[in-house]
Image 1 (cartoon, rainbow, N blue to C red):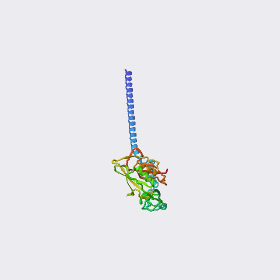
Image 2 (cartoon, helix red, strand yellow):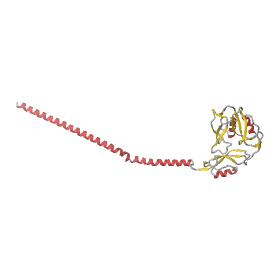
Image 3 (cartoon, rainbow, N blue to C red):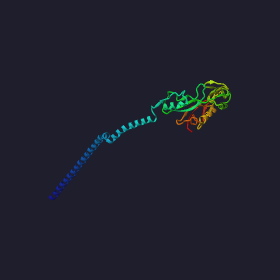
Image 4 (tube, rainbow, N blue to C red):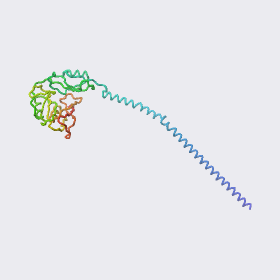
Length: 306
């Protein structure tokens, strides 16, 4: 009986110790997990605080980035300033001269006046004029008092030095092609073609020199420029733009007149010295079988060295 009681007590004691041990172990485990969780939360808070504190610091205190920014802010304006100065030098900005008045100067004086004003000149035409002395400048482009770059070419028209008297042929009521041939045979030049409404198409209605009417067999200077008045019919007529590329001035003049068109503005490249040998490399409007102009219209032409 006593033995049984002892065993029962031992079992109860052992069970109590086991329960205590188990309870103690569970409490220890829970405390350990709580501590780990608290440590993790504290570490997370520290990391979050470090992140927000370090973020602005990386943009402000990062010395290489700051140096690069300062270097760029200084270098870019400097490079832009150098670029503008280069453009000023390359384009001769604000380095211009005033074109003098060449009118009335003799051919022998052109070199000195051009060198004095740091300009160059090209004689593009010579004409006969009964009212002007021989061998002087009567027209120029650009006009006097125009601002131009240094070494700009000035295009001059002069009076002929050697002239003779010829009779103006009777071209009234001839076709334009016939009139051109007769006028040029005697050493005269055809100037502007003016078209008027008339029942006669492409027939010569009148002629003049500088707006002054002349008559058949009138004596005029050889080389005089004669303007023709031509009939264009009773309706507006158009012609195809001719091809002037690679032609010189004389040939282009003939082609345009036979096409019932006029020469417009003439442009010469800077390196052109002798305008009589220059050839056309561009025209406006360009040649095109679909491109048409009214009778008497003008075509601008651009010359270069052959």
